[in-house]
Image (cartoon, rainbow, N blue to C red; front, side, top):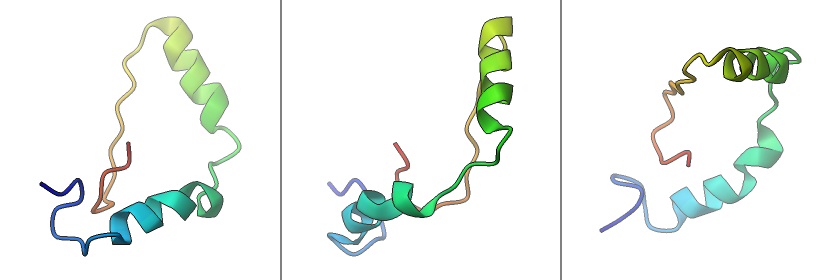
Length: 54
């Protein structure tokens, strides 16, 4: 069973291998996530990417 349903074999892995190099978080991302974590608030990831974002 593929980890990336509907994606050509190898493409999902290749994309994931370079995704971190292409993605840049907003400057306030870590401070906001840190404040949520320290306050006990839940952190939920919502994405429209079509593959496993791990």
